[in-house]
Length: 219
Image 1 (cartoon, one colour):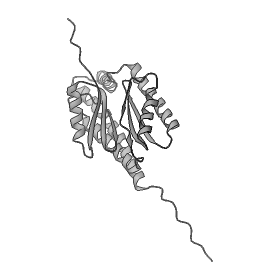
Image 2 (image 1 turned 30 degrees about the horizontal axis):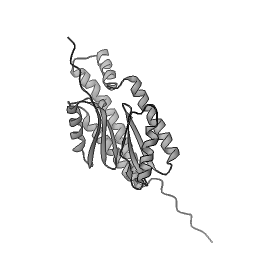
Image 3 (image 1 turned 180 degrees about the horizontal axis):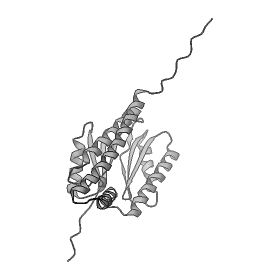
């Protein structure tokens, strides 16, 4: 008497495919940025080695010091480690820019939301916390994949905008809400927010900027 073989598990679900495609889109966006920077360098008169140096300078263009840049990376690692250790069932993200941390994700109670902020605020080098965590069930893979796709689209639309350096604005998306971080002038921040606001799929834009005030040239 023959028995039928058990059904094979589905390896690629629709949410997983969406997440993979969004990640691929992010990679394409990165290479688009790499391709456009040399063209910009050439357009302003740089050739050969000069264009290469301009490319490196533009890719590294950041109003943070190198020390602050590195510390932002350290803060994110520390925050994620502490949150995962203390709140293993919650879906949480921490993004640090200029020592200020943006918290996004979902937790089950308001008390837990406040506790997460306290845990991150206790990291010695953190100077401020913006708590945008939602009291809700954890987001689905489909939702996270859609957020990744929105982030990629916003970054792609930043390229060549002519009003601010793309590398000066960090984009974070959670549940179709786009958060913008960076050290920018009011004009730059408004321009970035307008691009994000008019990007397909975005429901709201939140500016989490540090204001940059250009210093007058010394005489």
